[in-house]
Image (tube, rainbow, N blue to C red):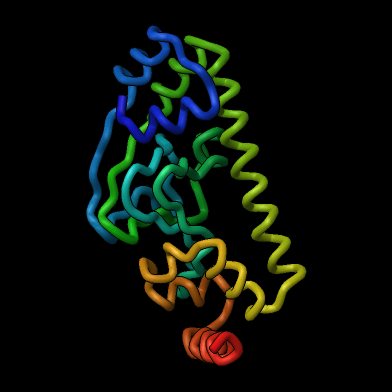
Amino acid sequence: MNASLTEYLSTRIALDETEQNAVSELLETKEFKRSHYLLKEGEVSNAFFFLQKGCIRLFYNVDGDEKSAFFYTEGQFVSSYESFIKQSPCNHYLQCVEDCEVVVIGFEAAEALLKLSPKFDALARIMMEEELALYQRIVASYVTQNPEKRYQQFSSENPHLMQRLPQHYIASYLGVSAETLSRIKKRVLSRTS
């Protein structure tokens, strides 16, 4: 079992040797190059991923414009949960922003782990709760904050992403144009210098 996945699991559930062996046997590690799509709109998600290295962007195509909705980084699970659970077509894309290394958890592997031990059911619940809490914070920021406040919150909570992401991805995530993002950054910088 990979060290970063082991570390993640150990902070949430305690696996015995049988459970650890099952994780090692059922899950595989894969590498993907920057710009690779893990999932495209209209496809059914047959796997979810634990991101060990790199950054993955979830985005929607809205009338030909890419609208970034989320950025996953090291130590996070990445999935189209609704598509995976319901085995239905998804309405978004998952794309590698950088070269990535992921642990692949296929549909059959997930089912086997859930049947093996109730601990994996508890882990699935924890993952979904963490994802739900994160999404609620994102939605709240759009309801309660203007783009400048969202930028300040995003940059303070994700300083590691500010240099890793192209500015137009950040702008689309904030719901503004690249030009507006430049003006926001200048205003924020002028107040802090």
